Amino acid sequence: MARSPLTLAALATSAVSGLDVAQTRRHSTGAHGLFDSALLQTTDGRTLIIRVPTSQSAETEQSADLVALRALTAGNRSRLPFEIPQLVGQAPFSGTRALVYELLAGDTFDADSLTGHVGVAGSIGRAIAAIHALPTAFVGTAGLPQQSSQECRTSTIEVIDQAANTGYLPAALLRRWEQATDDDSLWQFAPTVVHGSMSADSLLITDDVVSGVLGWSGLCVGDPAHDLHWLLSARGDAAETAMAAYTSARQSGDARITQRAMLYAELELARWLLHGTATRNQSIVDDAVVMLDGLVETVHSHTMPPLYPAAGPILDVADVESMLENTPRRARDRDQHTSMHTDSYDLSELESGEFASREFDRSVGAAASGHSSGSAQSSEAIDDSTGPITLPGDVTDDQARTRSSSE
Image (cartoon, rainbow, N blue to C red; front, side, top):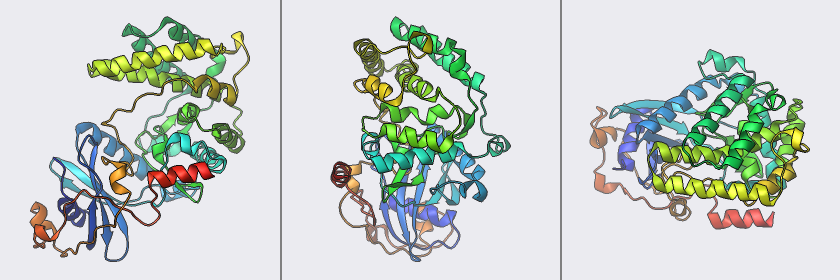
């Protein structure tokens, strides 16, 4: 059952000393989400977001994200051309904990819209390059994962083997992927700091540039190609611009990064298959099988060379986009909404109307959740609606599509 905005606001007052909440609105529908969340506007004009995990997997993700954000010290943040979430407080609650963050400004768009705009795509490439340029030492100091290039190769082989063991992986894809992992030159790269779960949901856009990056639970040292594979699956015309901007900013000499990114993009289908088999969800398995068969047909119909150079020239970004253009993309698990700007809510419900104004007593907590902070207004005085929210700078889906197409 979803926690009410009143309860979440009360938690926030426990998490942040001296917090005075003036307005609140639920930030989730409470259905199929990893987090319950609410937007809070304070009497001093700040806008905060509070999140509470709704499952063990959500708590695990939250903990990993918290470790990563703490590792990204002021010095590391100063090297990045965008903002990342700032934790302002936390409080225990029902065996888990609620975290309160400053709400970052910016709009979210789907991958095709992001890579369909040349200016935005270039900013994306530079933003990812800035992450990869961070010094790697802090990752180990924070106890976060570190992989060598060969360990990245080994973990990739493990995914392929697991997919093959399901009996559902087409032989043509198994050969293609095995040839890639057998190619020593493909795995000659310098590991970098990696965001680890980069996607369109990770990016906030303001004035056509990346203004914020969310969802740092996968932060590690590893293969930089992991942060790029989603670009190759997007259907925007400017994905090549993003890759070119990345390459220009990095100048790392990693000539095979595009091929590894393509391999990881294809392996997302294998991971979807493994998710289906692990959860014994036959509909997911069937979905993955259809998409894997589609990938085989795409490779054959486009007569594209394998992922290793002996059979043909190294693919450039345009070749990769051509190959992946008609490949069915992995259906998202409806239970996975990792970005704090895409918590468990129906985006259409947040795209009209006003931020609900509700007056809170400074001691709202006691009435909501039993915290010893005094008494609150009656719950009848506070709207527990899951209705829409529009914050300054927000855009609707229609506006986003119009904006993307017009630019």
